[in-house]
Image 1 (cartoon, rainbow, N blue to C red):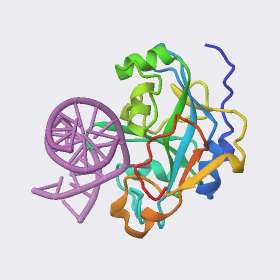
Image 2 (image 1 turned 180 degrees about the vertical axis):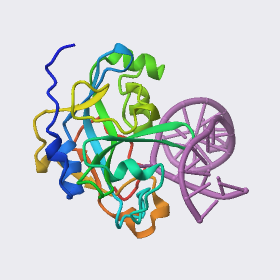
Image 3 (image 1 turned 90 degrees about the vertical axis):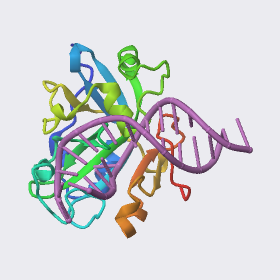
Image 4 (image 1 turned 30 degrees about the horizontal axis):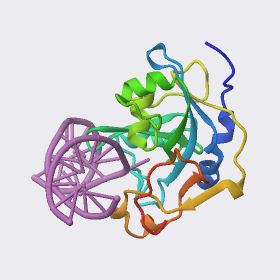
Amino acid sequence: MSNIYLPIDIQSLQSEDVLSLAKLLLGKFIVSKIDDALCVLKIVETEAYRGADDKASHAYPNKMTPRTKTMFLSGGVSYIYLCYGIHNMFNVVVGPTGIANAILIRAAEPVDGVLEMKERRQSKEVNVANGPGKLCQALGITRDHNNMNICTPSSLIYLAENKKISNEDIEIGPRVGIAYAEECAMWPWRFRIKDNKYTSKPKNPSY
DNA sequence: GAGTAGATCGGCT
DNA sequence: GCCGATCTACTCG
């Protein structure tokens, strides 16, 4: 397997500043080698979740359960869970041990392995990952890939370096699909690359 | 087009 | 037993 995708530094994911990290992950690559097929996506949309004071987080308020315990691990592992009984969601756990912060990867742009991803999605559409559920399906990610180190090329899934997206190319808005979280639902914790057509459809009218 | 229901199941109240 | 960090298909117009 080619080595052109260099893993990101796991140390860079140890900060407690989940908002800065959500912006940092924009533009980075997700490399998947599931089923021996190399598939690469460029992250174009993220959302931050903070376990301590964010009602939209599964770990709020710092509640550890069998499901959420991976969010309390040291940054650099995957947190994957099932939503609506159908869709897998891919999160990057960040922060030091004991801080339940995570970043949801909401959308990504196809870079390599497009044929494989279209086949997994059973779709002719090239835009195979403009939404968190579709992204996991395109890459073949399931809950089996929960709690994996995603900063090493030996993993089936890892994050790879790419040039940083500058602040003026980042659009900020409220998060999606969390109306139940009351006032937290308004927090501008959603980050997208400006003018990128591979971001997810904004359901939020105020955005 | 826009709006809505149905799918489907694990995790927690 | 209820409901979700979603997506698709189907309706109506």
